[in-house]
Image 1 (cartoon, rainbow, N blue to C red):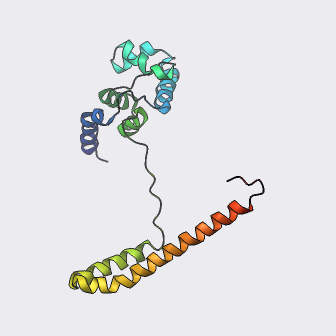
Image 2 (tube, rainbow, N blue to C red):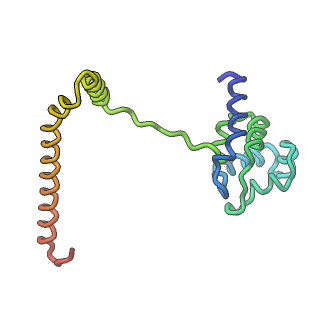
Length: 174
């Protein structure tokens, strides 16, 4: 990501992030651990030194590091950008730790039959565009009837299994 693009993205996050964060949201434990670790390793555990490095009031920084989790406050988006800049961190990671952005979403791989199914839908749409609605219904009615019958049979089988298990319980409980 180029510097200009990153700058525009982080400015946009700072502008719009407050609208997304729920009231009363607390920074994640990861954010607390990140700040606490930096403060302990680099600044001798001093909140005063950390607030001076960031150029912020002691009271603001101390609320981020409150030992009692329910009393901690979330740093503002501007403060997150400042933290990222001063600590040499990725602004997006800092926004995630502070709770302004969701954790990375893992998208599962597509199933192997997905491409085949997509192609069938594309073919069906191309054909349906050329056909009149009566021709489409003439084709679909038998398939829909079969599906309804199949689902009906499935529900009947399920009911039979449930009823058989209820009868076979030795204690008679349901």
